[in-house]
Length: 207
Image (cartoon, rainbow, N blue to C red; front, side, top):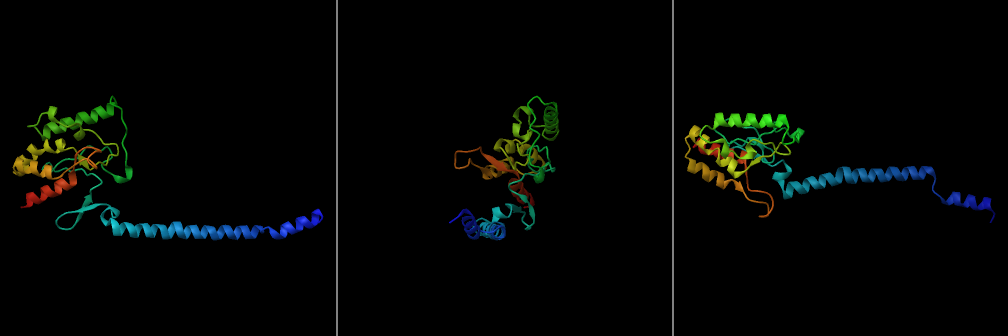
């Protein structure tokens, strides 16, 4: 077979450019349906069955059934009769997660801490600054941390007891009840979810 006949036979056997084009279109359509529709729907359905609370944002409700927030995102509590959260440089806006990553000598951070300490003195005159836990005057890495340390909750009890008339012993028991342990008993630190704690406190106040 001469070269011209060989080239003609190869051209007849090889797919045309049009065939390649339609193959690409079909594969794209298959993956769009598979990855863009079937997989998300299956994942969503599975999450709703296995972990509906987490899949819907870990939302928390008050006794009236109203959504008051998520247990994963902190809030600012302006009522001094409630437990206060950590400082958040982004005002706990979930769409702006992050912090300024200031160094320890940054003047803006030092001023913010100084202002927080001054406010603490005003709101908690009976508790010296030496007993103030660092997490009440420092920002978390995300700016969204919903937790404080047990010590940061306990140090607020004198103020809350004075404003609400609830005995300090009752508030101490409430903090202990809402203290979460280390993950798997090994990782992280003990912590208290401030929103959960305040929901429980509000129920006690309403009795």
